[in-house]
Structures are given as structure tokens and as C-alpha cells.
Length: 258
Image (cartoon, rainbow, N blue to C red; front, side):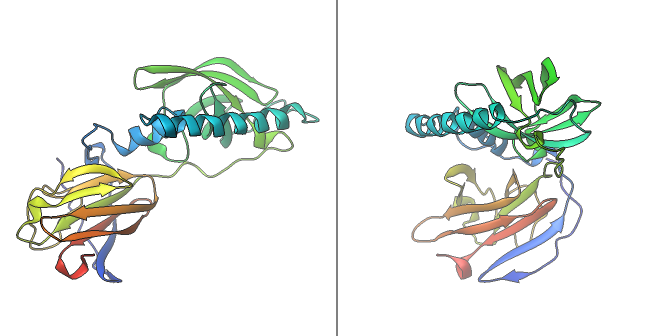
């Protein structure tokens, strides 16, 4: 695993250490959980409503169909449709007309879709083929989701009344968990209820992001719930905020246990 040579800025927030520094975004910083799912896989499963949990999937599909009905009603009731879509990033609703109706971002050049991102995180950019060009604020593409191919209809619902470009998708954020306890290698880590494994060694001082012995996770910028559990009664839990192009370093020790 490639180490990062940039030193972390030290800052103490609340009862624990949250130290931020801007870092590069290598693919090998992503940790896998026991189910073999990375944060990217989790986000894509949520986008497509392809979760393993049957009840969650059923509820998500019902919400998606309700959302799709609203999107199609708004589209059908539009008094006019754009002749072309302006260059830049645009927010669209992407649907397979069956399982999902989810927001996505596309990049337009010369009225042609050149990039597709499933949501608002650049790591969720997906390979695609244009099946029909943009016409009256709609387009049809074929999307590749890790060997699964979906035919997806795109609605430029925000461009029906006027051209509306948006900010580009977010770059990655990182969360790095580590410990200076002697029994650091017994500590297990969960983030948003997904298990990401155990720390493999003790660090006497703050390690670099993604350094050996840490659990470093590449995520979409935002707020996440985490849990750490060691042997006996020692455990940790709380919210962490991961910022774009930065690494949040979180030390687990006896001072900040739950």
C-alpha cells in the first residue's frame, strides 16, 4: 500500500483527535468489509436499489416508483422542452423505470453526454453507451454497474424551463482510524453499520493516512456514524465528518472511549 508523505496537522476537537490535512486520492486507500463491499459498491447498490436486505430493497423500490411518477408528471406537464442542453454539469433523474429513480450528474459537451456520475461523488462515475441522443430534455443510455448492465432513461427535469448547470461532483474524503493502545490489534471498526475489519497494530504517534495498521476508508464527503469495539468493555462510537480532499485521523484510546 502506498504511504502518504504529507504530515498531518494536529487539532483536538471535543474529547478525541480529529486531524485534517489535504491528501492525494489513490484507489488503494479503500478498505473492504467482510461482505467484500467498498463504500463505492455500497453507494452504487443504494443508487440502483440492489441492496441485499429484502425489506430495505422493497421500501426503496416503492419510494423510487413514487418519485418516478412525480418526475414523469412534471415532465409531461412541461409547456416547452429545451432544444439543446448547455455545456457543463447537469443534475438529472436516472431511472430504469422499474427499480430505481435516483439523482445523478452528467457532463454535457456539444449537447452530448460525455460523463455520468451516479450521485454526487466523482468515484461513482460509470462507463456508459448512448442509446438515444438528448431530445426534448430526455436521453437513453446503457450503464455498466460492475458487470451488470442497465438501460437507463435520463430526465433533464431541472433544465425544462431554463438552462441550469450545477457544481461538479465531489472529490473523495478519507477517514483513518488508529490506536496507541497496546491491544490495538483487537479493535474492530464499523462505519454506518458496515464492518471494515480490525486494526492490525499499535501506533505510538499519529500515522499517515492509509498507513499499514490503520483502517482507512475512502468515502463521499459527509457525516458518518462509526463504532469501534475492543476486548472487554472498551468501545467507541459517534459521528465523524469527512471533508472533500481531506483525511480525518481518528485516534481510539482510553480517553475517548464511550
